[in-house]
Length: 437
Image (cartoon, rainbow, N blue to C red; front, side, top):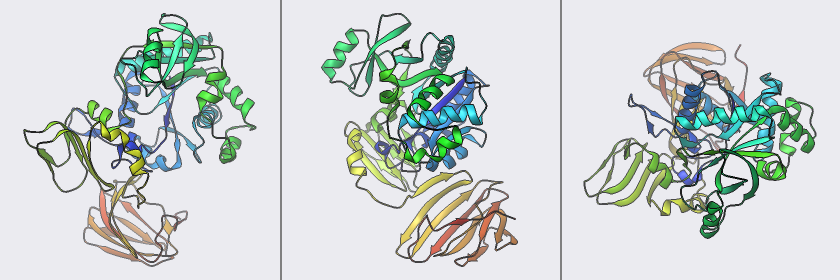
């Protein structure tokens, strides 16, 4: 299978665990048999590889998510990087061109496109294999998966098939309806549109060339920011007459809100949490190094992270976004390809950060124009390079760097340090990278 996973959005409805860098698909809340936790993207990637060990997986995403993807999935996963956000049609066009021009996949082969964050079981990926096989037949230019609706939802668009066969021609699409309209659609045999579809690569390349003036992947990447923002549904699906839909009756959940996310969690507590016996239907997720205690609560979600603390009735948690949109603050936690960082303290002319470097990884060799930095190694061992001079470091060592000097640190073991940034106008943009000689 060739699979493109669409990984976009900041998932503000799952604040405070999500932010502009750490989208909902990177939150580790699903417990494995060994007691560790995995995220949505890790879970889906694992399930794909279980269904097809040779599957080619490409993640279409923004620049801000690349480090988190490498951190959670390793360096070998394919990534089609969007230079900026331009909605789903440009993203899919770029990913298709990436598969053909960069990965060298035959344009006659089919590819499956689906969201990165559904909560599904293994039968979903068996359905994806059948979807790919159906696209290979060439009976239709697009083949969709339609989810058998379990209730008249207002959250999804609907697909109206020609008949009740397992695979049928699509008659029409309906936008997100009212509950009453949804009931009528379901009587007609309508299916939820989960945004899962397959096509032959050459079909999408031709569509992309029809709507965008470009020569190859590199040319499309270069002019990406000039492209019109338009969804795949509007640009392609609603104008295509040769479309089929395959029915899927297995479990499929869109974990876009705290209410739906907690339904899929295997346990009520994640992190240092406690609740008394009077609590009912309460979920607590705590990423802070302090305990959270709940008593006598009903139908409540509590989430604590460096970004903030949420205490909400589960039903009301769906309406969080307008409030989160008003919050403007420093990103407090992020996963990078080399490890992670957490902001500990923010002052007018200083920023204090706890940095964790994974063993064998290093930061970029870089400098800052407007700030000095101090590193205090609190655990582990490694090697610093400051203006070309190498020095072994271990727990207790202090390294000072003035503005303008080039520096990096390499971790021999897992290495933790406290970084203090000192200066006026501290900014993530005050960074110049250099090749390490």
